[in-house]
Structures are given as C-alpha cells and as structure tokens.
Amino acid sequence: CGISKTTLYLHDNYYFKYIDKQSVCFCGFTYDALRNLDGDTLYIPSKIYGLSVVKIEYLGYESIIGVASSYYYKAVKKIIIPSTVKVIGGFYNCENLQDISLPEGLEIIENTAFKNCKSLKKITLPSTLKEIGYCAFSACSSSTNITFKDTSGWYIQYGEGIWNIIDVSNSTNNANILKIDYVNDGYRLEKRY
Picture 1 (cartoon, one colour):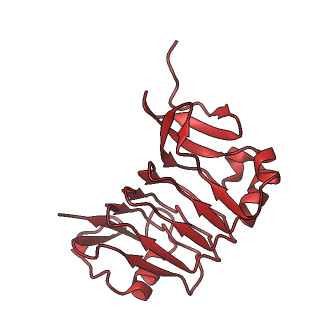
Picture 2 (cartoon, rainbow, N blue to C red):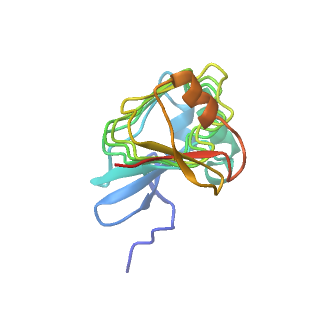
C-alpha cells in the first residue's frame, strides 16, 4: 500500500500531505485546535510523524478547512514557522496577522501566499529566498514594508513578459510592487546568481 501525495491526512490537531518518505506539507490545524488557541499565536510544527515539515499551504482557505476554521485563522496575530520550512504556499486571509518571522532556509513564497493579510506591517525576507510568486502580498496593508536581507541578483517579471533586473533595496517600493493584485498576473521575482 503506497502513500498518496494528494490525500489530506490528519494527525493529532494537524492536517498534512506526504511529499516523500522524509517530508510532509503542513495544511492546517483542526477546528478544535484553533478554537482552543492559547492567545493569538500559531506554532507550525517542525515534524509530523517524525517527518520534516518543509512546506506550508492552505492556511485560511475555507474550501479546505471549512468556514468555521477560516474564522479562527482570521484572528491569528502571530505565526511561528520552523526552520525546516522551504516553501510557503499560503497564509491567505489571515486578516489580523501582524507578525511573522520567515526562517533562514526558506526558498519559495508561492502565488498569493500572504494575500489579504491586511494587518501585516513589516516582513523581512531571508537571504535564502530564491523566488516570490505572483500577487504574494496582494491586498496587504498600504503601510506594509517588505525588506530583503539579500538585495543582489533579483529579477522581476510582469505577467508572461521578459525578466528584468530590479533594485530591491527600498522596502516601500518592494511592497508596492509585490502587492499588485491581478489573478495569475502581476509581478513575480526570482533570485539569479
């Protein structure tokens, strides 16, 4: 009997998918875990069943976790992400999220990952980051600042257009570019060495 990479599994209070024999994708908390949240902070686990959590997706998506759970994600103000995570696919709709520390080792922020995080004021992108998907920060606060730890070698693409080098040393300008909100369009950034 093989392990399905598309099936959503439940362990304790966590939803997850298998990626391979060593790692899993964290897909969310159960309704009860969110309802009984101690304070306003979510702690993403570094391991599930002894396997490393290397990706996060779906947090806040009602179609996966249900409308009631989505309500509790909207109340979260702080999220702690373990250093095992390489890919972030979504904190969509975490409207009150104010504080998130992205760990060194993070490589990819996928399309719409922080969409509608209206209270997010500041985010620092780790030096290990290699790619930022379309609309990654769309519908964030107008005062959100996005700072890159490593500002060299970044290229930008609008839609399906050509890639151009971009200066990412200005955090306000970065936020204005990355908050553009066009479905499967907008700007995408990639680190090139």
